[in-house]
Length: 367
Length: 205
Image 1 (cartoon, each protein chain N blue to C red):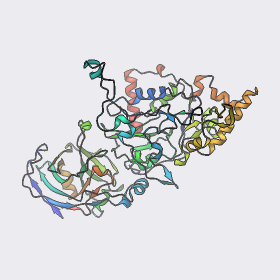
Image 2 (cartoon, chains in turn yellow, cyan):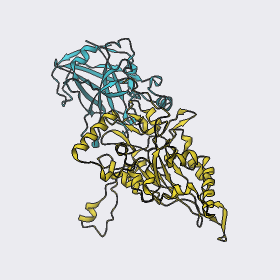
Image 3 (tube, rainbow over the protein chains, first blue to last red):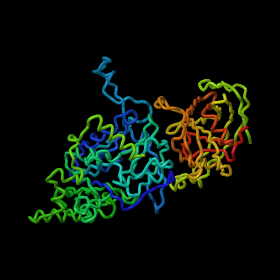
Image 4 (cartoon, chains in turn green, blue):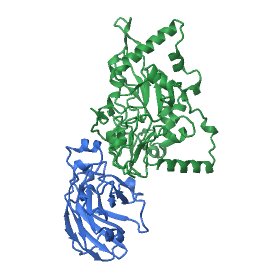
């Protein structure tokens, strides 16, 4: 216990990374649901969505998270806002009794119960499909978000009890819930605001990168359940894997808000969009409908190069040339998405004795 | 500053059971920002007002097995939202007699900390007591060396003042001989090292 209160973050350790191809995301929320039913069904977790998919542009989850500070500025941890329960919203109780059994089925509509805490005024996908722009050039796209399992996790650095740590074997940013004192500096410091507070257990909680699945070579639930085949999972330094090519070689997969300084390990293929229409409804082939400056605000200045490369590869394909990049992004074989994590979870030994051993081993590893 | 331990049977659930044992008023001071355990907290709280609980009335009693600590302090009129009010007693480690109590222990010389934490309606199944080791301000982890005497606590607001009883093994104070007090005003988002503390050790008779 000599390092309590100190960050033990190291570069160069193995790192599991993910790439989300935003050109394929249809906002179906299957990733969100897959995570929800697996990890956040206990009391105090009702409002927790470790995986969220939001319509962009939008205020997101929690409401206005991009203006809440945190991360690093000039190499120093920067002050951040701790998102409130109301800013996350959701976790509602509905008036089922009143509507279905109270004899008011024709006069009362199903609705969240208002507890006076403003939690019914926002939710994880509140501004769905609102987007931006004026018809006929309105636009939107979807942005799935989870903990970025950053290489420089400011949440870990901010935790006074060292309940949080970055696992050396796969780079997952985890929390020892037995040590967490609920002080929530992690929530303040995280610039992505992907840490939730469990008001029942008095601890913070966040995405665990499905580490018990990774240990069995099973891909995280959000990735494996994605019907759009858009989520790559693998080791960032595997030079033969798609993640390394997309991120490091082709540089078309970019971290969200790189200016936050935490070096995320979740990456995004930025969204292409239709061309703008002129007033006479002719096509303006020079101008994408999603403003490049907006994409730059999300993914940094490298987004312009990434978009140019994507368009160049599309042009190659249209000219009947082979594009390894597009072949990779198409994902002809579903399991190619998951690198070393291709085990079918339904084939795992889940007998009670085996589960007990796994849980015990996991607990020991965490501690 | 010293406090006497009075011999008396105390019922943890009877907040009036300290009776007419005289209270000692202990002044508290803001835990300095420069002793906070990491850069984030130092940067983010450098210019924030905290340490709102300025003093605590303390009574000590014992039944020869347990130490009972009665702590009363003013409850803020500002409603608690995210954080709850809390108070704790910590014990000077035997090799830390020359350390300042404002750090509530250190990595080299941790101190035992018994914390009472107000619980919300949602948290009614959680204990109000925490038995912790403190390695510095907010550097708290569960005490894995607890003996057979469990740390327990109870508290409620009476006439705008928190009235709290914390109890644990009498051996803790018999070994330490000196104690410190730490308090957090939850309505001011105080927790961990963001709180107020005794600036000098309190001798226990």
